[in-house]
Figure (cartoon, rainbow, N blue to C red):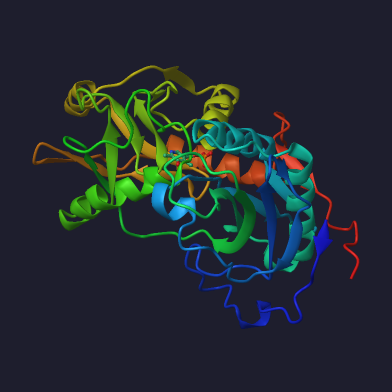
Amino acid sequence: MKITHTKESRIKNVDFDNLSFGEIFTDHMFVCDYKDGVWNTPEIMPYQPIQMDPSSSVFHYGQAVFEGMKAYKDESNEVWLFRPDQNFERINKSSERLSMPTFPKELFFNGLEKLLSLDKEWIKKGTGNSLYIRPFVFASQAGVQASASNAYKFMIICSPVSSYYSSSEVHVQVAEKYSRAASGGVGFAKAAGNYAAQFYPTSLALKEGFQQIIWTDANTHEYLEEAGTMNIFFRINDTLVTTPTSDRILDGITRKSILRLSEHLGIKTDVRPITIHELLSAKKDGSLKEIFGAGTAVVVSPIKGFGYQNERYVLEDIEDSFAQKLKNHMVAIQTNAAEDPFGWRYPVNTTDSVSL
Ligand SMILES: *Cc1c(COP(=O)(O)O)cnc(C)c1O
């Protein structure tokens, strides 16, 4: 791997106490090109703009996928990833669906660890701090033929984040018209275009005073499937309910970890389809205790209320919240502050001196 160090780190210009999500990037980036059927030798270089032909396939047909993962620093400055093997497998699954070449495991992990070694000063310890890691792949071949590209770029960029504790409550609108994913489509993949298609319906929901949308199935708009870009959980009495994965559901690493952790903590889980009708009757009879979203960026995001057919429903405050309990436990595992009986934490070797 070719490594070019930045001449001067930009870290001194960064106000780590006032970070907004995903706006500032670290000193280096990882790049690997695919041409003539092979991935070439990867490179780490100073973070910088890349040059692209205007006819590049990605601009026209959106052939692109991505991942989102985080690195954490514990109290003794050790760096940890959380289940990175899962992100690795998923980006290749996404790539396959978009007819893109899979990326080799060794290149992924070597590149990631070298990049984190170089930019480890950007990972701050302390509650809520982490480094958001964004691996992505896109079609870079020049030419507007509507077919799978022959050239791709795999890149990894990193952005320091601090968890942003919003004091405002999250209210979500249940989708009655728009859909995020359809059967046979690409909803299970982290395909770039899935997100582009969400912006417009989400902007309409924002105008009506909601922060996010609960996506429903495209056929009937009855089954509750995801919350914005997160998986969704409902606490009915003392059971956590979440929908099964399918080709419409993103198989979230936070989701599956929460299911496993709940089992371990003695919280009952039920993986089954759940409809808006069941939600409404559970709200009515008082058995609906909590709703929350789950994803890497926030781990767990409590949802205070929802809107459906011009009615608004607000959940009562709850002591002994599962959302809070699960979030605290997940973060403790991620940051090496709690036992990890599942083997989820992955130590990053940052001492293996990346020579100048
Ligand atoms: C990324 C993502 C999630 C959450 O996945 P994690 O692996 O937990 O971060 C859920 N839903 C959608 C649509 C996503 O893109």
